[in-house]
Image 1 (cartoon, rainbow, N blue to C red):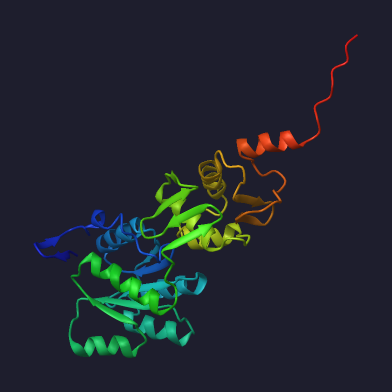
Image 2 (tube, rainbow, N blue to C red):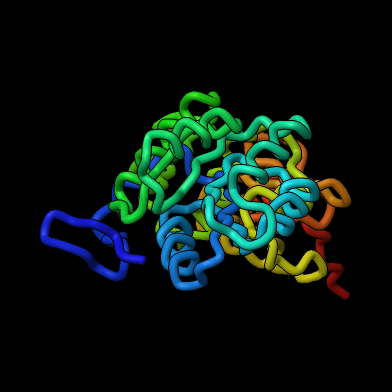
Length: 280
């Protein structure tokens, strides 16, 4: 598959042109149903660089199975797939009560095909080849209709997240984060003041390849804590042992939760005075 541009066709989507203008609806988990592995790889790579979590499947039966065991915010569904075609999958998803937006992809561009897809429950229809920018715009529009569009800025205490620029600052200090660190922090920020468990984090921030038995979430949490709480008198990222993680201003720090150097010094200053040495 190629993506159409003004100058012709190119094999890869122009992702780099949009990396600094990420959508407000980041941290969505999408199901991409596409039997052409090359197309699926290119589209998934571009979407992941836009902070989406993407699961890929190649057949109609696998698509229905994945949609049954996972929660998706949107489905990108190719019409011409092995087994049940995209029309049948769309119809079955709606019949089973799934209400997530469905964007259908197809090389068929006749009016009858578009009407058929919409009549089976699709929310939008995109004809191949297409520009990657148009795919992103249609995803944003569908998520906006479903009420999932994210706010442009999120504030938690003195922590500021600019979701459009994917940037983070605290008390005016810019904080450099990797794409996955940012995705994880934004999900916590959107759920500020609430304890978020590992299973929920894995479901919304990682894709189906995530190993539930790994300590990857803990590793990322420690990295984020060091970056956002470094030098701060009041920590914002808290661990609730046995429950999950909480982002917000809290006076109660869980047992075993790492403290920032500032917090540690403060707690030592407020604690009991050190024992006096006895001189003989």
